[in-house]
Structures are given as C-alpha cells and as structure tokens.
Image 1 (cartoon, rainbow, N blue to C red):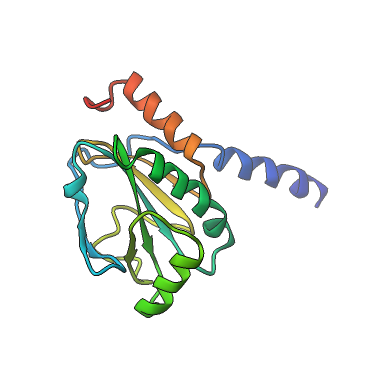
Image 2 (cartoon, rainbow, N blue to C red):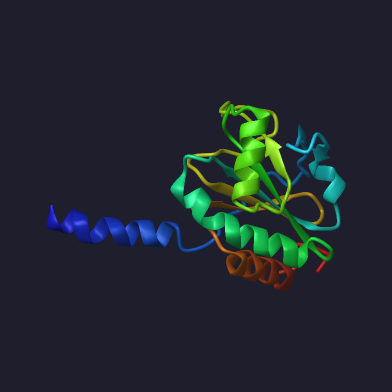
Length: 171
C-alpha cells in the first residue's frame, strides 16, 4: 500500500507533465462545425493559418475550472496574432445556463455547445477525461493532445517546439 501511495503520484505526474505529441494523429486536416453560445457557427477550418486550442470541458470538473483563467489569458494574448482557443462544453446544458456560467467565469474565448456524446462529430479525437485539449496546427492538423489541466505557457512552449521541429510551415 505504501508503494502505491508513493509510485502512483509519480506516474500521474509524468503522464500529466506536458502535451503528448506522439504521431498517433491523422495527417489529414480535421474540421468541425458547431454552434457557439453566441449563436454563431464555428468551423475549425475558418482558423487555418492560426494555431487552434480545442478544449473539451465541463462545468462540474474542478481541473477544467482551474485552467479557464489561463486559457482566457492565452486567448486574449494571441487571438489577433497567431492562435485562438475554442472551448467545447461537453454537457447537455441549456443555453442560458451555459452562457451565465461562461460569463461568471469571465471566459473570453468562444464557448461552443457540445454534448455528453463521446462520438459526437465535433470530437477531433478521443476524450478520455475532463479536460482534454487538442492542439491543431495552422494547417489544420492535430499535433498534440493533453488530458488534464494545462497552462498558456505549456501551449506556447509546445507551439515554439513544433515550429523548431518544423511540424508547421507557419510560425
């Protein structure tokens, strides 16, 4: 039992220490079309030329709530230049409840109305836990997935590393 208490936290720390960028993702560009709480339809392909952080989250998820301020700060810093955040809520919430929640948490990035369906057409990959975030290159290709909370610095570091490795032509 003592071994489990000591080893399990180390294993979890290693698994959650950074964005996973294994080449398990398809090379073809991904796309989806989904409505936001503002009534607009958001297409992933509309953001070609920018990095897109696709964040799947839920209001009942403490790690999701923990990362919201950092994602909002990242979005505000990058939205007019090189990257955006799209937050897909994975609950079947009424529009007003989701809009009120988003406003109370000062979410500045687009919040899209998802559902609890793990096979929804807008899921660009597996969502094993909340939050799950995918990083999509300016060319529209999924380059990384992170399960668990992340920070703007983690995203910026990943973008810089991908540019250095020439995983994208747009840097």
